[in-house]
Length: 146
Image (cartoon, rainbow, N blue to C red; front, side, top):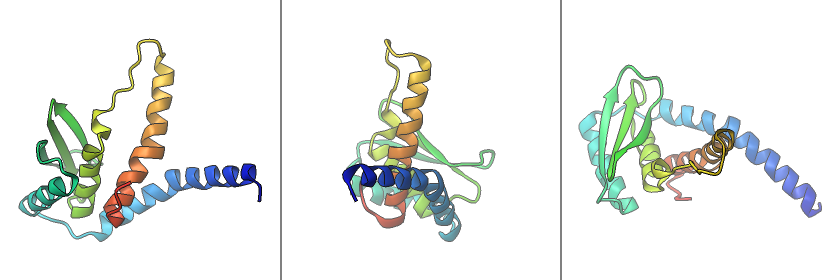
């Protein structure tokens, strides 16, 4: 196989993995992992912060029954919030969200004064689906820091 054929096969395979494999793996991780109480997840959060060397970051866990999907985000300077939806309160999902924080995914800004909004949306879409989400999913399932 030549290099062009290899690259084409790789791009097709990686694209399929990102759009179909990652969501399926996330669903499996959410449904297979036993549910935890907030106190149990606080202990996991503490150990994950040490593992990622982010003890200086203030990360709060919030149980939110009104959302469908869990997520993490930056509140301000060094404060972050992980919102866990009903049925998604487990160790694997917490690890997934902590990896987003540790890798700086919640800190990324895409706004460029010279670039238009469509460009920014495209970059965000590609970055999230092909970089951030696969890396966090692989970490939550295997412990590999990519």
